Length: 287
Length: 148
Image (tube, rainbow over all chains, first blue to last red; front, side, top):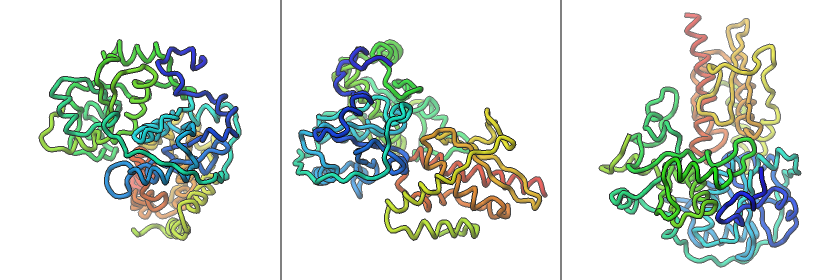
């Protein structure tokens, strides 16, 4: 894969290479954060010095279906030894799916000193780079966070309905089977926690993983991404776009791609996603 | 806790005695290290679809091998080297359910996944891991049906 700077991204600075991370393992201004789907992977082995942010325990509200609030975020940042000035570099399994989810949650609190390690855990392992199983001991920090800002990059169901009624674009990043509604009826698969199948009217379907090179987990270059998101399905950089999936994790990956790599003006993640929309009474659904 | 075959119940008790999440994770990692890929004389790639665990993103396969006493020995292939949870579950279920009476294997609830890993699993991970249990139980039911 070419150098990140040569791939034509709108904001190439949000990505760092495995070489960059390897050169900053002992940099006190950098905190490397692993976020995975598989709960065993971090303890099995991680980049030396990396801390874990677990999507269920660390990012979710302990009771409601929501994200942690300011106090919880401050507590998390102290535990992983991050200050407002620390550059946080996320990486993880599944082509950085959960890493971009954590990145998105961090942006709700405005921690914009944040980057994604291109290729994630897969590329680091493929390159035979060092891994450690011992959990690093970092000194607790002080961190004062602003209140969570849901307005900029997050959207709730009423606003989604208004968006649909205004014929504005959405991108459904689930699989084609989920998009079509077929998945709810497939034998041998448990249902997805929604009473109805299909998609939100007006949504185009671009499965999230199309943005990555499967052989090493790196992001595709900007021209390849434009071919998918703009030429193929007709999204435009000045559109107001809503991305969704099942609970908002896969769509955070697409949010990252559209916002930072392609420079879209306004992309919001609907984390209620299909588990909310597919259970709502009297909202429009298309199959 | 639901009723499980003796050996599986013993493993669940061992996991249940862990004091915290970290200890449980370490124990499960120890199990994952016991995972042995299927022997080539039992199955070799490309593996047939009928052995593929449905919805498992770690590309896991289960291969039942009939024993003389009518039970099954279960072998596994986990193609994704990052599929540590799938490897741990394969090691646990392979050890606990191979040679177990088929009626008991067929009755194992997919909920055993949550007793092993806890409830903090993503939907995708849950689907894959419970799919492994469901497939094994299905092989046991098919074998029982052949005997009838």
